[in-house]
Structure formats: C-alpha cells, structure tokens
Image (cartoon, rainbow, N blue to C red; front, side, top):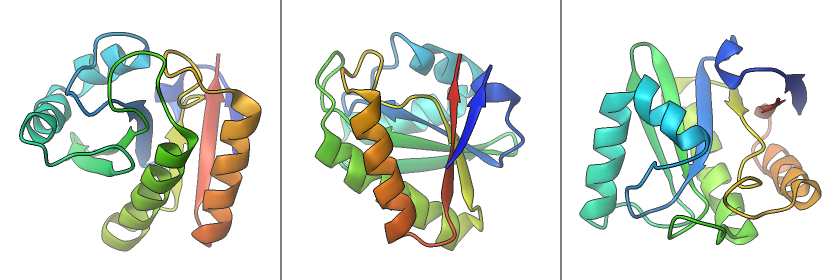
Length: 145
C-alpha cells in the first residue's frame, strides 16, 4: 500500500477509484468531483444503477479521456451505510478487472468509505491490505488531504 497526501487527482497512476452507492447518485463528497471530471463515467454508472445491473459488492470500471475509473460499490444507498464486506468484494472485483482487462496494477483512491460512507479507516486499511494479498502484484495508492 502506497500512502500519499494531497489531491487524489494529482496521481500518476493509470486508474482512480472511489466508493459509490448503487442508486446512481454522486451528490456529495469526492463523488461530486468524479461526476464533474468524468461525466461519461457518471452517465454509464447511473444507467447501470437504474437498470439494476450494478449492485453492492461490485465494481463498475469505465475508461474516460485516458483515465480508468473504478466505481466501487461499498454502499446501497447514499449516506453512512457502507459495509466492509461490500468494500472487500467490490475492491477485489475492481483489482481483478484492472489487472486482467486493463493491465493496471495500482489504483489510486481516497480514504474510501470513511467519509460519508461511515466506515473507520483502520478497518478499511485492513480490508484493503487483504485485497492486496488476495490479488498478488496489485496495490492501492491511498490519498488523504
């Protein structure tokens, strides 16, 4: 795990990710920045949610303007209801998808699920380290302000 301070979007990683709900809402927190920076990703994510094709514990990976975006479904509804189990399975899904289909071995993320999602960083860090064990040669680049 690589730890960084500053703006997530200053990363040199080929992929960025964030925690999302499965109702198609990117209305607050860093999700708004993702929505504004990657409007095509937002529309594709929203459509997948509204049609029921995107569920908690899954990852929705999209490429826009040369950046690969991992939308990690750590919660069903907007607000403080993220689940560690959903974060684990969605992060594994994202990691495998990035490694297998996009040939990317590093995913830059914020303190995922720890803001509006309501999760605690020490437990999230534990989950992410488990993902790095489950998916060899993959690592998270975690950004905090």
